[in-house]
Amino acid sequence: MVLSLSRSLGHNKSHRLFLPLCFNLCSIQLCISKITDQMSRRYDSRTTIFSPEGRLYQVEYAMEAIGNAGSAIGILSKDGVVLVGEKKVTSKLLQTSTSTEKMYKIDDHVACAVAGIMSDANILINTARVQAQRYTLSYQEPMPVEQLVQSLCDTKQGYTQFGGLRPFGVSFLFAGWDKNYGFQLYMSDPSGNYGGWKAAAVGANNQAAQSMLKQDYKEDISREEAVQLALKVLSKTMDSTSLTSDKLELAEVFLSSSGKVKYQVCTPDALSKMLVKYGVTQPPAET
Amino acid sequence: MECVFGMVGKGFALVVADTSAVNSILVHKSNEDKIMILDSHKLMGASGEAGDRAQFTEYVQKNVSLYQFRNGIPLTTKAAANFMRGELATALRKNPYMVNIVLAGYDKETGPSLYFIDYIATLHKVDKAAFGYGSYFSLAMMDRHYHPDMTVEEAIKLAEQCIEEIRSRLVVAPQNFVIKIVDKDGAREHSWRRTTKD
Image (tube, rainbow over all chains, first blue to last red; front, top):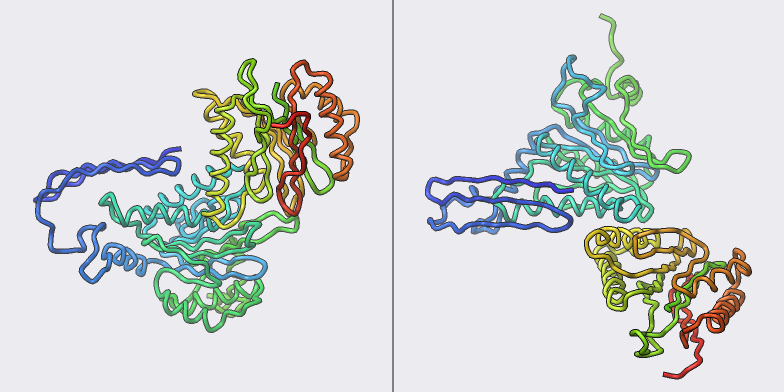
């Protein structure tokens, strides 16, 4: 299983940089040819250099890009993890049964919500899926959630340190279950940093959502309460005036009665009913 | 003439191996420890080409340690067994390791387990296993006297019977044997059965 990328760049003053970048089983090989021109004074045009203040501008700009994208919220409860996402592309013509914009299943026991550039997200989701299967091929066991997140973040970090390629403009919320730590929620960003969270928000207005979650999150929250809280917080931070089920995606990771991990995306009808039930939207008026 | 065998008892697993290091007709030493302790709760008895045995067992042991350092949790016995099988399978069609392994481990959730892994990457989870010419005798002995949930004393007695059988019936029988055990308290050496001092 090899994921390979190659790209050649030309700068007006530099030599042509030919940078093949290949990933194989746990090793990254890289060739760079020497640049002989003077360094450009704008530190942000190269991903792989620090600014004088010690910042990585490209990484920060990537996070800016995500700040304009549809938000996603994840909440960890004692019997499951809830992920809610705001859909930016809403159209009656969209095939909702076959396409999802925000929620993706990585493995039987891990799913993720996405905020940012969708095409970048697809690459990373595929990478995560390959990594999860590669682990199961070696060990015949599901990959522990933190290891999967860490592995993906190591990939993302590579794009901030070498290769000259821009970072991925995606933030993830990973939700999963494993036998070591039970239900877990992780947030990762373009820098390749990740953290385990009880409740987290990414995308547009994530600061506001995060502070709202901080106020209302309780330690022993149940999955149903978590859904309610997530919908409430999302409705308050979303720009649109009215919230309908076609603007949202809701997914839950929980254990079924037989003890297996289940990843379930809510159907639009069930979602509409829930929105009414929790007082997030008004019931549809007859016109 | 290398003999390795193992069995699962009640809450423990046992691996027995001979301790001879032989090169054609010369015995280099009779106290070669062929049962490597992989981590706190795993044991691996290996037989086969001496260089491959050392190389492969050390490689596995270092990878098992690396996993634990990286991830903060140990591998389960099943995961370690499958990892080993994968390594043997990958090398098989290029540069095979001529090593046969009996892997014994104890996991908190699933208890003791024993895996039979041969040099062409066969993997079986079993209750009793044996490799080498000695297997003809030890497997027969175990088939006759083994029953599930044996106590440590019963299992040691059965191991001694197997060793006796190997000593009396195998034409160039190894002199000494080592017995190692793994249970909830960890993997450790249990005892030796010597006929010669080295």
